[in-house]
Image 1: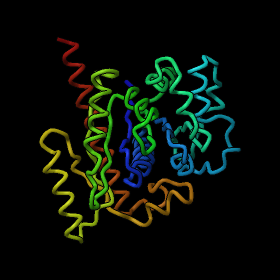
Image 2: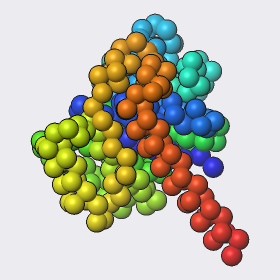
Image 3: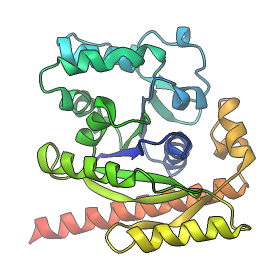
Image 4: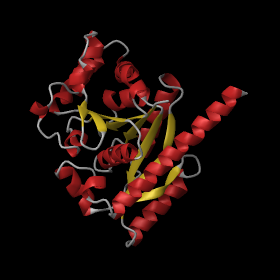
Length: 273
């Protein structure tokens, strides 16, 4: 049974891409079949697996959206890239930047991405969506298409600023477009346990949200090698396999897998009854 997970926050620089790439790579290391959808015109998730030049691939996320809206068949073999880390990728580049105007006039515009994902998800155990930093049509599409959403929050001042807007958007999607959408949890990123400020913010996130939203036990430390890895087209599992951030993302991935297994068992037992 495939699971679709969006990594979301309308703020930039909070670890969405690093989380999307690292979660995808670690799931693949755990023998899961993974498709990563890059929904950001900056294409950082695509570049993180070594596909820097858009001439390396004939089709991208823009073509996906156009094909769904205009009901034009798309060659999946040409679209999906196969990385050296056993993660399949639907790439993105700057051509996606102008797609909002096309989505605005599309029929059922919030379900465009879902209609595509429904055609491919049965081939995968997990579909991970790296969303762009905004609350426009693209992340709304991602939330509509997803089973779960992981919210990344940076352990910096004003980290939770805008969280209320994001949670409102999630609740709006849940009420009107995707009743089954669940918040998988809040992942605190870029922590520095040596500073009191980082500890304070981590504590505040757990205090403010832990009562009604799961906050992952794992936190992701700030790590230079993690930033370096995306620049050379490798996940941190290849570039820095013994690093602190690598171990943290491994623990986070185990939490995600364990949650999925628990839910699968619950569904199975309720079905048997």
